[in-house]
Length: 453
Image 1 (cartoon, helix red, strand yellow):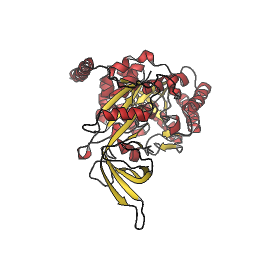
Image 2 (image 1 turned 60 degrees about the vertical axis):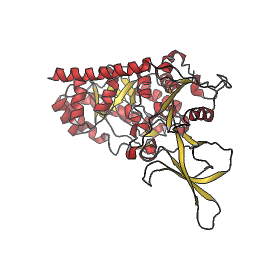
Image 3 (image 1 turned 120 degrees about the horizontal axis):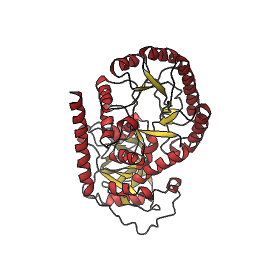
Image 4 (image 1 turned 90 degrees about the vertical axis):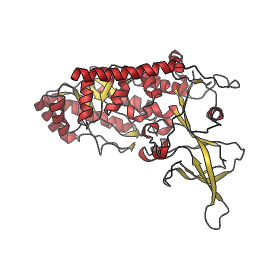
């Protein structure tokens, strides 16, 4: 019966892959008219990485080639012209930016293997691009594991099941399909693994200082250092296969010191494990890496330099170093473009001559802008206007649902816009589309892919 279930899982996945292959066969690359722009002269340092050898991804996603020198507002305006009929919201996804982030990672963190956090953005562009580049995947559920399996990847070597607290059905599925690494952070999970999956490689997640991060996790996950000796002794008594340590400094970390302190804590756990009788061979340094350098007060290269120095000092070459970046890969690749479908004008307050404009757009807090609530995101709203007015007016921007709480910006200043004009938000790939719902029947699904050599 077990073999029958497993065969059915693999058959379903193979059928889905075949459907995707058939869709790709009919795709051809789009070409927009950017003839007035030369294909060089950018100030973006990320473009220093040569991505020409990855051009097959350009075809895979039916991408539009865009010269490097095209300003973003011009690029967005051209795609808006393609949407004049229905004026639906859409994403612009720069596949080449995902590639450049990967090349930057390999250059500055050569010892660290990235396991991309699927939860951050599970779109086909993110998963397929990173899979082809050689990245592995951090999965937290049965469905995320299935997404990775659908790409035909080796489950044993390319997935870590990094949810410290697992539902039994998800746990059994991961065991059935051959996942080889998991994380735990408490005694109950150790006993659960003894009963259900005692042979799997277990990584102990510890709590570290995440006070310098936008999203803090240690209140929910991670064993306190003072509990580590007890947990490792329990694991030893149960005969579990403990193989390493993991930590997470919090999503959107803005301090190099947070990584340094966490690495020192991890080293102390390695030493405790050795005394208990375990030979740890894996260190998982989690996520927290900035999506772009202007997302954080510290640059990725500075974080990488500090990490390299610490791991070379503290951990032997026999220790496998992995990480779980999400925002780092996803953030810069996506731009959200929304249409203004309604508008009204209010007075700010009695006695004031300054009007306040209310704009209504076709994505909102229940859609991709959920990041304002769940990810504490700060967005930079930019405009594509049919007029030439430069004076800025007070305005509030609402999403499309019937909930008055569905507002994405309040009391900001923009040039006056008209129905049919557009706004866009760059660097919108992290924790946006992945958590979007269809509340009230609204969801942005249209995507345009681009590529810059």
